[in-house]
Image (cartoon, rainbow, N blue to C red; front, side):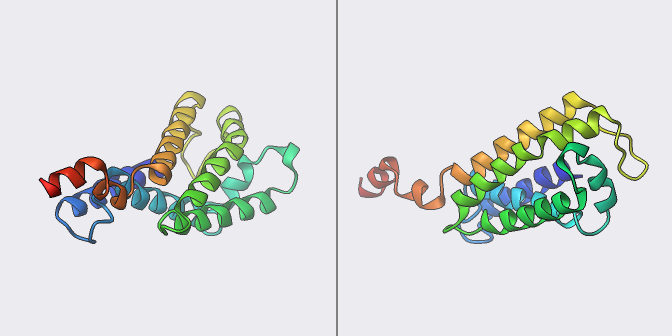
Length: 165
């Protein structure tokens, strides 16, 4: 579901950008990705508290100690990052935090895949697809956080030349 959320919301935001809904905020792919990344982390952050909390606690490798603590901390970080990636003033800092978070939770994802942790009635995602999905999330967050902003698009040298010609 998180991957579907990322893709669907990004595509809808990009469509809104083409149709000029929402001003210029979705006029670039990085702008649309910000919406997709925010939706992804709102979804995953929320389930840290409602719905899948028990399953997420099973993902925490025993060496890390209290799984409830880690699930709470990562849930709060995901929700904060979702908000931060949408705000121009905090976009880059939020992206850096989300990138670090994705790397920090990698041991839990590996543990879940190698110890067959289930989510509801769904079997664990095998390790390779899980790692590839994590790489996709890292790329999406990096592009959303550090990709060109609308202002950069309109103040590039090409844009200035085309308006003065």
